[in-house]
Picture 1 (cartoon, rainbow, N blue to C red):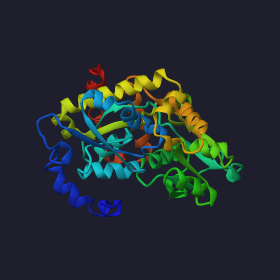
Picture 2 (picture 1 turned 90 degrees about the horizontal axis):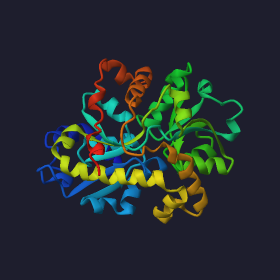
Picture 3 (picture 1 turned 60 degrees about the horizontal axis):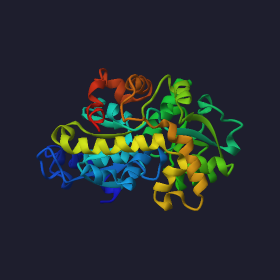
Length: 343
């Protein structure tokens, strides 16, 4: 199904499929276990979501006794749409979607927390760097995000508001990721934008872009957002989690092994395990992009203690849905049960 059709048909799909969650091809057993789990990844080749493909490459899904079908959708917002429509069982995307969705009356929870920071950066076109050096300069600028409603969009709004700039004062541009983002920088379609590695490494290495806000490190994230802002995670509908605990435990065990691998191996060793086309023609640059970002990954998949509150605080400042929701129960947006039981 084409993405445009999925988006147009979402209301009907959600109404028709939410009542029979667990009847998708990936969850036909309905017995608490499943032969196959389908996961949509918000960009399989993005370093922030590296654990998804790396787990497959290392054979850890097979070792855990589970079949996982990884699909790729560059925008986290669109991946979320597919999950809500019952087309996939879970999403490897940003934790903040679970908070935003609760504000809209839906229960979704992170079952494995891959990263305790966003792993992204605001990159400005070198030609615009003289007049755009921080979020205080966002007013009047064209700012790229993967798509409206994505985590890059939510983070851009948060950075703007925290620096006295309202969303209405800048132009949000859907710039995608990778080649489309780089093209937008090249042709002046955007002045700056929120993106990830390896796109960041490519822009900086070629001199086309400069990092002005770095959310790939704890230091940079705390300075910009006031605390740790957990990013990449595996999140799933709460009812699906409750109905498939055995399978999700196997899945979580596989991912925790991968996180341990990342934390005990060099960027070069990690890159060597990934598909060759992820590095393209520049293996060293790909290794650098992993090295620049690998510090964001948790060692055990556990949610950082103060992370959810930081996310809620940030979204309360900039997200209309969260602002209108009033009360958010953070305990329902994540669980550490599966990763703590992984062995």
